[in-house]
Length: 147
Image (cartoon, rainbow, N blue to C red; front, side, top):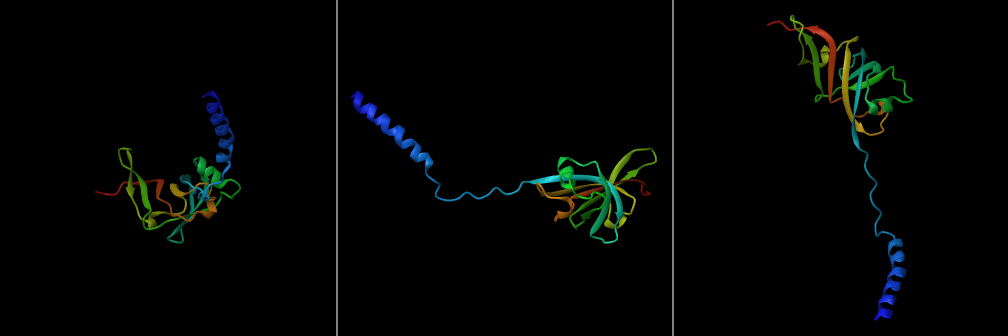
């Protein structure tokens, strides 16, 4: 009985590496790039084209934004604005309280300080952003609308 058990154990030890060395039947698909949030803050240089805002210098980025700007001239980043981009403007009321209200693309002017958010695949460089900004906040203090 002990001989049979010992022979079975030896056969298992010899067959195990061969089973693990076999190649899979199909090649696994490569992992797709993860979509991450790129956050930037900067000053608007121009907004001549209604679908593009040129921002410079870009400051106050998150880690993905810093990586997107590495090796790229950060003095002019083109930010696309689509119909789905949520635009907000900061208003300052007479009592000093601040809040954000919706604004249109026409309200963005050169010299405004903006903060914007773009979702793109991880590792994308700033000039290669194909997606439009998800939202943009204009931090230039504006007077509160009347009434």
